[in-house]
Image (cartoon, rainbow, N blue to C red):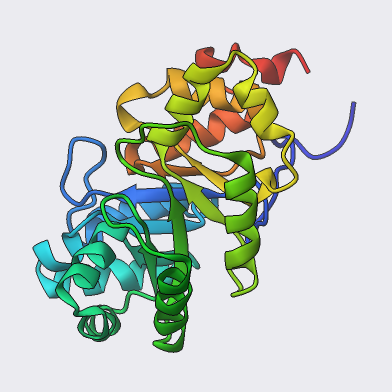
Length: 259
C-alpha cells in the first residue's frame, strides 16, 4: 500500500459538523488555562480541533480584565471564536444591564456571548429582541436551550420551532443543556435514537459532562458518530476527544484498527 501516512480524514475548520466547543474554566483541575501561556500551550497542541471557546460562567468578570483580554486574543489568533458563558448574560438581563455587558465584552475582546435560559425564562418576543440587541451590538450569539434542572423531557416539536426561530436570525447551531439530554435518555430506551433522526439534529451541539469523561464522551460518539457536535469539552480533554473521533483509545475500542 502506498500513499500518505496519516489519520483518516475528518472535517476541517470552518466546520458545519463535528464541531467542538471548549469550556475554559481558567486555572482549574480540568486543564490549566490560567493566563495567556496556559492557553497557548493548549492551542499549540489542539487548536485545529477547537471551534469555539466559552469563558466559563462569570469569569469575564471574575478574572482580571487583562487576563481575559490575552485569552481572547490567543483564541482569535488561532481562529477560534471566544465567547462569554450564558450565566453572564442571565446576570446582566436580570440587572437590566445588557448594554453595559456588551460594552464590557468589547473591552475584553470577546466576540461572542451565549444566550441561555438556565435560570431565567424569556418569552419568544424577549428572546428574539435580546438576540437582535446582542447582534446589533456586534456580538456572535451562541444560543443554548434547556434548564439546569428540567422537570419534563424536551419536546422535539418545541426544539424544532426554536431551531427555526433562531436560524432566521443567522444562528446556525444551538447548544442543548446536558441535563436535558440526561432527562430525555431516561424517558425511553429509544429516545436518543429518535433525537438523531430529527431533521434539525445536525444543528445541535450536545453538552457533555466533564466529570463523566471518558465514558460519556465515547458513548456519545459511538451513538451519534464521529461528526457529532459537542460542547463543554475541557482543555485537558480536547486531544483525547479528537482521538475518540478518529477511533483512538480504549474507550472507543480502538475502532481505528477495525474499520
